[in-house]
Length: 153
Image (cartoon, rainbow, N blue to C red; front, top):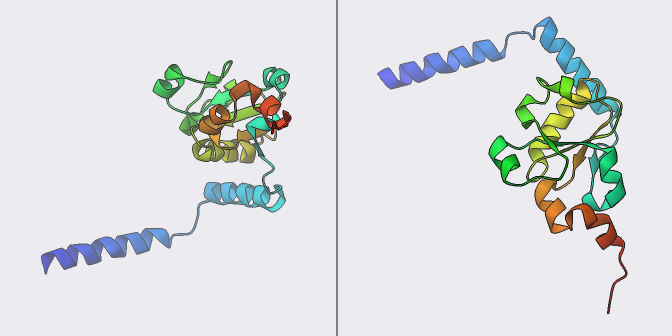
């Protein structure tokens, strides 16, 4: 009986807090996200490893959004480490005047960081589709060359 009373009380608190109206700050954030989603192209913020020729990698500011240990173990040459959760906090390190490429292991966490940055006004942010794992599997810096190489029969 005591457990069900505690459960009912907790449920009542959850319902009470979730039904509160959003504050002005929350509304502004929601409006910004809604505006972004209304106009973003499907897949507009993603790029595949094979779409980046070797010489074009130097044009990107590459951000490894994984944790420090993963970055220290292995990363794309020239990348800087800004963990995905810190993308907004450390956005002053991320340029707005050149293409920015974010990646994590598979692309899901970097996509979250990229979404946050794009809502914050970074229109130059792209997400490496498939992340570090796909980049490696497709040939790393040579993925574009491998993708366009003639098929040998």
